[in-house]
Figure 1 (cartoon, rainbow, N blue to C red):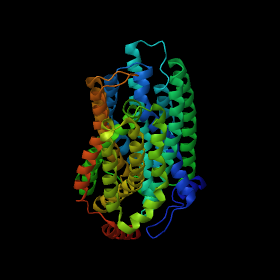
Figure 2 (figure 1 turned 90 degrees about the horizontal axis):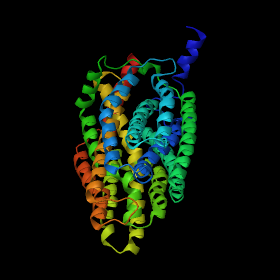
Figure 3 (figure 1 turned 45 degrees about the vertical axis):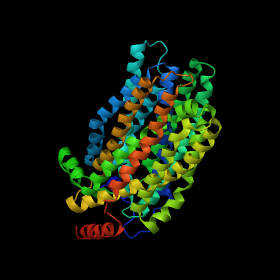
Figure 4 (figure 1 turned 120 degrees about the vertical axis):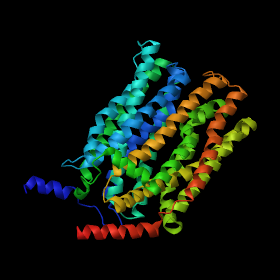
Length: 473
């Protein structure tokens, strides 16, 4: 074996703990979480501002933008499974996941800048086409990053609770990026008061800066992280066989259904927050602070949820977060029916509780999903994290696409007119999507999730068998 090959082999296995290891090093956790800052920034700025940017600055009809997002989810039916399977099947000297992280840098950067920089010379049809390519391209490029990145997290530790710590700090990184996106959004909203041309200029400058920083953070993760060489090549020869295994895994099937239902309820929250602040609460200048009231508890509560998951169990805690999320947003349905002066207090208080539940869900959900992948290895002998996280990612994005499509058409049909005071019909339509849909969806999700049985005891039994197989192999 050449000296270079030895270095590569060591670099792929160093710092990866066994089942009995208590903790990952902070160096590993920081490197894994770092790209989340850039991804969180991009996702939130697209999710929160692109609809408003399109309707209020570019003057594209909301139904058209809703349709674009819906079409992007149809494309995800192809791109998500494809990237997940290719990530599982890849063999590269730097690792099957880090290779794809590097590949993602250029398309993510180009697509993100494209969405926020349509040329002013474009006619209406060309502008719609530009935004369609940009939006669909961005989410496709993000799949190239997100699926391998989530998959790598599942490989870094087999420990039941250490996974919660790893993904919890990843959630913090994403939230930090999201808070930075809020700052940018506030800058863009201020720019709207000057002129549409000023918004376009500022949006372009911010998007270029974000693309550069995100590329640097992804590169840092690739350099600092390691992968397990023994996981490469352990996947079904057929992509259809791989995803058949995912669906036939009873734990995965249940979580896929619950995840889809959850996101049917929650996906419009990011899109409609600006609309709620401006057209229901009547205080558009408070939009950033309302979102911060959600994000700050989401971030600072993570260290609380990790020990609580050890005490009460990850399954119970995830169910609790669903209940709290549903009740928090469900309460916002009353906003149009109470005094205008009271609406600010109500939305801020409910946003804090919703943020607490988001911190729990962002910490626990991917940890449980990683445990499900261990069950698949127990049953099939394969390691196909990419296929699993592609399926989970697709469930989320399908629900988001459906609800963005629905939101665009609901705004259009209810009589929404940009930058004007809205009728009660429009306000009720907005808060029904914003409040009642999450309450209904999360209630159904909790009921279904009571059937989930892959708890800590069962996972420990599975890990014992897998560790024994590794020793014998």
